[in-house]
Image (cartoon, rainbow, N blue to C red; front, side, top):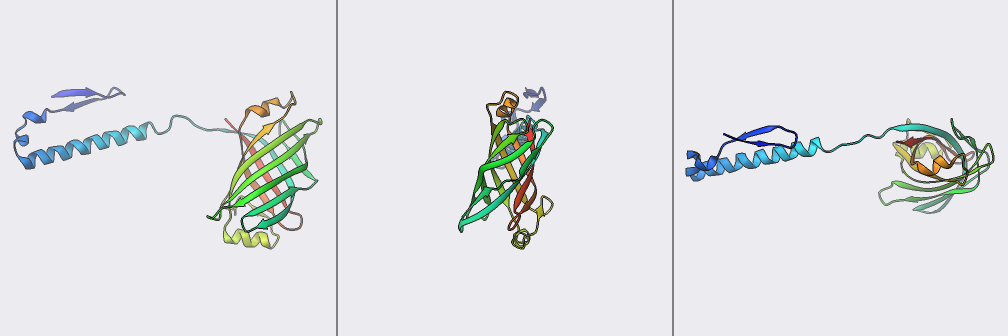
Amino acid sequence: MSTITAKDGTEIYYKDWASHRAWSSKEGRMKLIAIAVTTVVALCGWTLRADAQSSEVTTEYLMTYLAPTERYPIDSSTVVSSVRPGGWVKGPRVSGKIIPPGGDWLRIMPSGVARLDVRLLIEADDGAHIYMTFNGIVVLSKEVTDALSRGEVVTDKTVPYFVTAPTFQTSSEKYGWLNKVQAVGKMVEYKRGEGAYSKFDVFIVR
């Protein structure tokens, strides 16, 4: 028997079927071809699975923020929300308040999924200004939509999916590191109607 050495060092033994007597009949040849094809497919599938993931993503807690909002439905597919005073940001390395102007230009897709397009302005405790923008995906069930229409607060425990991807821009040397990171946000609480607000936990992706 001869051998083939795979990339990971595994030795695969094979037989030269061309000289095997099974090759002499049509039925034998078809069986041998089927065996060969099955073997190749199995080996390729194993290789693809083994090489599918080569890195991992970790997160680092950045901050929690709350933004009071006012909703303005434009039509069946667009809702504009403005940021009202009273928002805040709290985190180990950045804290402050969310100040106007700011807002969300939400689009409801034909599938029913909502896509966020948000711009917020953070004024840090030391007076520095940090511009935060993000897109995001929101999936609401009928039960959650009904609860929101009643003015109830919904949370990440009941909303199927509410995730954002913030980035930051600032000229502050103290907070300049924010310009160099990608973040991900997870909705914590969300309310519509009187006293509407959005509350998020935000994490840096490493």
